[in-house]
Length: 464
Image (tube, rainbow, N blue to C red; front, side, top):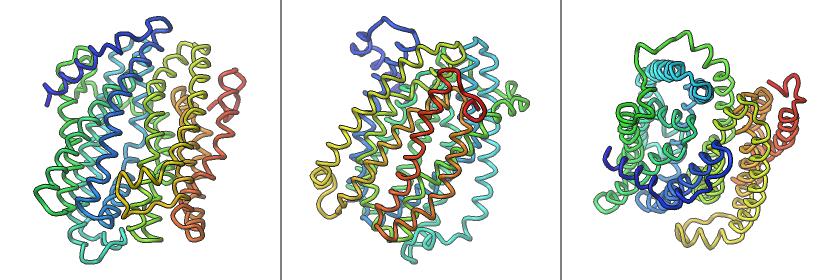
C-alpha cells in the first residue's frame, strides 16, 4: 500500500499539467492553483467512484436496506462532534505556527491534539460498548424488528472503525493546514476505490449482507489512513519534523486549541443538526424507503459541492497566512474570483435539474423514482450552501466566527421543528426546504460581515 501511495504521489507530481501551471503571481496563489488542479484530478476520480457506488450498493442489498444503511451512517456521523473543535483549532494554529516559522510549536500542537482526541475517543468507545446492547436499533432506524440483532452488530462494527478513523484522519487536517489538501484527497480517493472493488467482489460472491457492506465501507479508510500516517510522519522529510511524540504533548496548549476550537465545536454540532438529520427525519416520517430517493438526489447534486470544495479548500489556510501577514489585496482578488465561480455553479445546477430525471434512470434504473420537486429543492440547497461555504471559509481562516456561531445555533434550534412541519405538508422535499430557508438568511449577514472585516470597519460581534 505504501508503495502504491508513493507511486501515485510521484505520478501526480510529474503530471505535465501541473508543471505547466503559471509561475507568475503570489507564491500562495501558485500553491493553491497546484492543489486545485491536483484536487480536480484526484477528487474527480473520487466523485466518479462515489457515484458508481450508489447503484452498486443498492443492487447488492435493496432500496430499503440501503435507506437503513444511509440513515445509520448519518447517525454515526453525529459523533464527529466529539473532537470538540480540536481538529479545526489545530488547522488554524498549525498554519499560524508555520507562517511564523515556529515548527517546534506546530509539532506541539499536533502531538497535543493527537493525545486529546485519543483520550476523548477512547472514552466514548468504552461508553458505547456498554450502552449498545441496550439500544433498539430497529426502532431507532424505523427498520423491521427482526433486524435488531443484525443492526446492533453492524452498528458496533461501524462505530469501532469510525473511532479509529477519527484519530487517524488528523493527518489529513495537517496536510490541509499546510495548504496541501490535494495530498489529503488522495487517500480518500484510494479508500473509495478499494471499497468499490471490495463491494463489487461481494456482489459476485455473496448475497446482500449489511454486515459485509459495513466492514467494506468502514475498514478500508482506516487501513489507508494508518499507512498514510506512517508514511508522512515516518518517511516524508517535509512532515517528519511534525511527527507526534509523547515528549511534545503539552496539555497547557489545550487552551490555545480550545479558544478557537470550542467555537468550531459548537459550529460542528449546529452543522450536524442542520445537514445530517434529514435522513433521520425522513426515515421517521416516511420510512427508510424514502431515504433512498433523497440520498440519490443528494449524491447527484453533491457533485456541485465537491467541485466547489476542490477549488476553495486550499484557501482556508491561505487566508490564515494572508491575514497574519496583512495581505488584504490578495484576499480581495481571490474572493472576487470565487464569487464569479458561484454564478457559474448556478448555471450548472440549472442544467443538472433540467436533465435530472434522465440521469437518474441511466444511473440507478427506473425502479427508484426521484420527484422533480425534490431535485429542485436539493439543487437550491446546494447553491445556498455553496455561497455560505465561500464566506465561511474566509471567516474560519481568520478566526472571525462568533456571528456565524450564533446564527448556526439559532438555525439548529429552528430546523427540526420546521423540517417536521414542512415535511408533513410537502413530503421529503419539505424536510430539505427547512435548511434552504434558514441558510438563505445567512447569505445576507455573511456579505455584510465580510465587507466590514476586509475594509477594517468591523467592530463588536462583526469582528469576533
